[in-house]
Image (cartoon, rainbow, N blue to C red; front, side):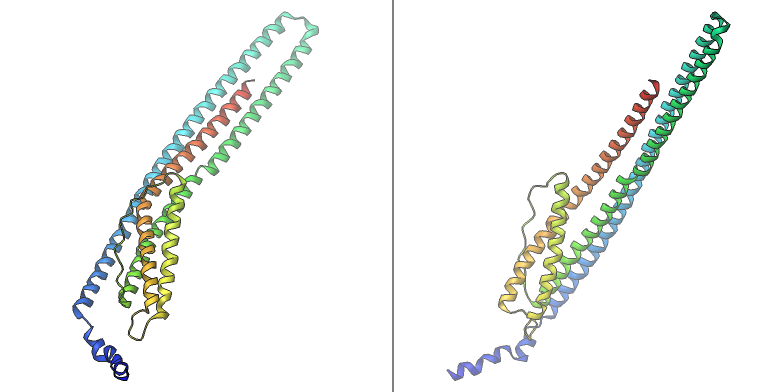
Length: 290
């Protein structure tokens, strides 16, 4: 019994630890890390380029939409003004014809009537112009809101993409240092959601990957004197790595569809705002004609 007890420490002696050191394996691991860093740099550049192209296209589209809406509103206002002036001229002509038919006693009443009509017409026109100006000001203030939301979401998702790559790299590096080999995770074949559910699942995958990576790195305190992890800690590390890899894979898969949905939602919001502004101006024109 005492002989077995005495021989156990020799298995973990400095000579055994030195023998387990594999310089080729370390070189392969360093090469793998360098390739991962190069891939990450390339992906970050592609994301920035894609973001810039999206911003330029969105800005051009918004500028054209604003110009089209402004031109259309200007034409409608000009047409309404001409029609309104024609009505005023017709009323004035009728008033003059009536004044020729009536006697001297009714001239004063006709003059009062004409003056009253002119004042009312002027007030209606001024009210219509004021309300039309108010609608335009509100539209001008809010028309850029969808674009601002789009730019903020694209910037946030670009950051998430970078962070997903970063946490995966950190987790792999930590496992390698601890001598823990993680099993390959199956490809994410789950259905891609639609609408805002895309953004919800993407956010959940990002947050899950970040939190689990922090939990994994916290296992640093469970290392043995030889740099490895204790048995329970090693098992927990494997479980965390599986969850991290799953979240990263899911998040990377949802990034592109989420970006498309955000652009589509921005376009829909812009169209809704334009339609509302157009309807408000139409209502004002109808009110002015009455």
